[in-house]
Picture 1: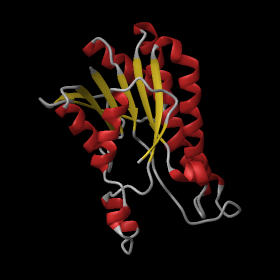
Picture 2 (picture 1 turned 45 degrees about the horizontal axis):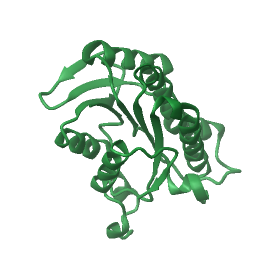
Picture 3 (picture 1 turned 180 degrees about the vertical axis):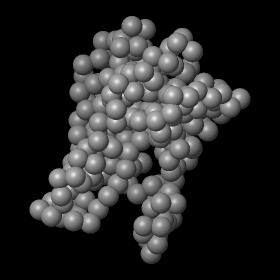
Amino acid sequence: MICVVTGAGGGTGPAIVDILFEKSKSVVAVLRGNEDSWQETGEHFLIKADMSDAVTVFKLAEEVCRRLGTFHVWVNVVGGFSMGPTVEEAPAKEWEKMWQLNFMTALNGCKAALPVMKEQKFGRIINFGSLAGLDGMVQAGPYAASKAAVINLSKSVALEYADYHITSNVIVPDIIDTPANRTAMPEADFLQWTSPEEIAKTVVKIIESEQTNEIVRV
């Protein structure tokens, strides 16, 4: 089974890449960047791409198919977080930044993956929402809104493509225990946070499941 994992260089992506490789999956790890490069490490494939650019993402999917024949799983991990101003105070550029980084990257990934999965009548799409996308969040309106859109995108994909045996699920974590989050919240109780390894195990469970249109909290 061939898996594409975007955001593979972030706080959570490496754990997902590692566990998929351990499960004998071929992994295409997509890193942030604009270089048109393809590298085989002996463990998995590495490629750089700007996931917010639709044309680039479609080219990425085409390149995976050209080199490997197809892919079966697409995990949209890439995303970002910001907080500070209220909804009233947040400038337009902050709303646009969160929309591009969280929603458009997920949308571009789905739109690039779906034609391939439709043709083979099988696929697993996994997106990442957040609890803020379900409940809202104080002083993080742009982030919460973008993640809410990802959650509903995932539901729509599940409903529209179930007849093609394509599942679409969304993982909804609370705070993930990453170096960036520890730096941003040094006084927090890290033991209460979700580890990247726990999220990675959840990704494997979803891939191996027939369930679709699920909001999976971790």
